[in-house]
Length: 227
Image (cartoon, rainbow, N blue to C red; front, top):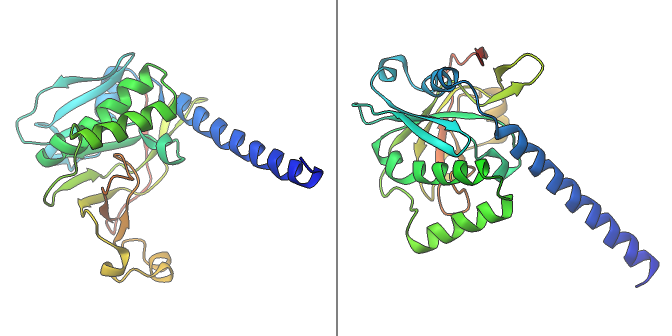
């Protein structure tokens, strides 16, 4: 191998190692077990207040997610931990409607199970790919909503608190939707963050799942206690 090629190869290998380290660090950050009451409160904070009392709830533990409350209003809430799959380390409190419970939530539960078991990221991705190929997982066949009104949150290990890292928002199922359909313009979005945008991150992202994200006009940052 020529010296120039070797330099390029080593540079690529270094970049790959850095990316892998970032994913590993994100997985370690997200594989944290909060006190049960704190996790439940954080999960429910994703929903509008009138839906919280009667929603189902999952909390994360040493073996992944466990259902700790059976609700009656068709919504289910958990603190999603799949962000490492798309280069992030945020916790994502989310409350899904009944359609999401049958489609998106099983994906989140599988990610949680494998994350708790300390499976590598590549194994988790392969398990999700296999699940979608076999029909174990599937996208919703009609519209719906997932609430993320607490926003994405980060854990501060020094204080034991989780702080909002992204604005609270609504996610409307919009499989195969495009930003062109919405008339999306980056400059306009920077001036007005409440404008809708299509996202394909999360919930197995590369499997045709997408959302239209809408940020309410009065989303404010806030802190949540860990215990």
